[in-house]
Image 1 (cartoon, rainbow, N blue to C red):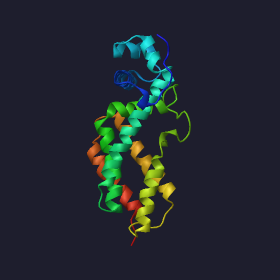
Image 2: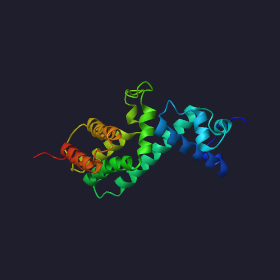
Image 3: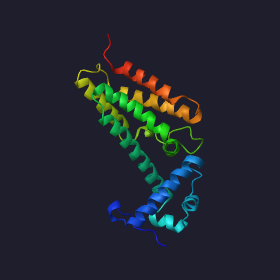
Image 4: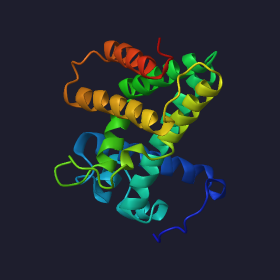
Amino acid sequence: MTARREAGPDALTFTERGRRQQLIEATIDLISTRGYPATSLSAIAERAGLSKAAVLYHFSSKDNLTRAALEQVMEQFRAHVGERVARAAGPRDAIVAYVRAMIGYQQAHRRQVRVITEMLLDDEGGTRLKTPGSHDTHGRWQALAALLTEGQEAGAFREFDVQVVALAIGGAIDGVIAHWLVHPDLDLDAAAAELEEFTLSAIEPRA
């Protein structure tokens, strides 16, 4: 079986889309349980019940397949947060919704969180970022900065550097999640409440 030419989603048949999704799900399962380095094309093929040639037909390399898996996870993550922020009544509620949704999604999707951390960490020990700042890809801090700017313009928040504060809030969320992944007994609901207070104290007007 020859490798298929990379094509957009609209060019795929129903069966091809189904096979690609099957392979992405198998990849997510393996990365979340075995880690990125141990997730080979052969292992993915075995988990999906397909041949290695079939994997290469749909995705020409491990990098292409794992990137597709990461992109799907990030897209679902963004949609989850975006939907909840969009329902907020005002700037303050939008920031609270953002913090709660960031924690809530990761609490309910531990497997997907593992994919994000495995894909963005150095293979040697998994303790260093492959590229500094790569944990904040996909316009994440920019989206939060936009919410903070809207709040400032509405007079709901004090004046501050929105980029720095967005990065600080994101870093606080990442730190809590990183601890929870290693120590699953951490009460994430209580942590989310603390992060909400931490965030509001940083952005609301001071007496």
